[in-house]
Image (cartoon, rainbow, N blue to C red):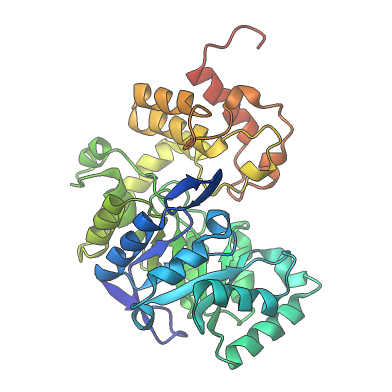
Length: 378
């Protein structure tokens, strides 16, 4: 595993690959979805054994269960791994109250990097901003947290404004082959001493990249699309760590191997990839990280991430039969719940909560047209 200084403020070195615990494997027990800890804990600890020393969680992840599992996985590793989790502004608990609950869930005395979750330019004028900052600084002084950080989903131009507060040690934001909007913000954060972690480098456990055949046309030898996507992110000198939401042992093994490769993409290779992705800009309009921020707000219970995942398999990889099977499996088994695109009433509630600002209603129509036999006027 390769390591790099995590900005100039933290005083630590971080692994180039981080473990995102948003998509841990789940199973159904007594009618409820719970983390499959028999799979998740060994998988996380395998990542640690391969050199990953940064793990990220949050209050909401895995139906509020992720932090419990991460805490268990850290047993025997706590002094060798940097722990990140997040405080969501707007929840029903205050900063200090929720922090103490999270410390209990994680079964630890301190959190290394405690983020304000998903803040944007609105944080600058939030009526409780000074209160939050004061409580964060107090928690840091008491040793409950080591560093104050933030995760980011706002428009790219807002990121430098948050950096300029001078409060934060590190930033976590979206960046990958299909979404390069935060490139300038990452450079700005890096130049101001912040550690930089990017989410979704390989599409949240799926692949946000080019097919190996296309990579070959560009003269880039890779074994998989995931390898190319991860190497692309790690070739950016303003990225310290690529945080991948891994939910299968094979993903851990492959991503760790790529992050251990001391030979990143060259400037010419990155330029070639950028050119190819510009030609495929239409794909980016559909791109979905599978964050599930939209699904709780859909009154029709449409499984939007699963639909878009199938469509990406169809468009990016040409796996048409496989993608059609994925689509038609939605709502037919306990593992892929919800409804398909034909249930959409175009209410727009999903789009209000999409951090990628996807035109979800329009894309659902396209997915339906691609995967269903739609009669005239339907």
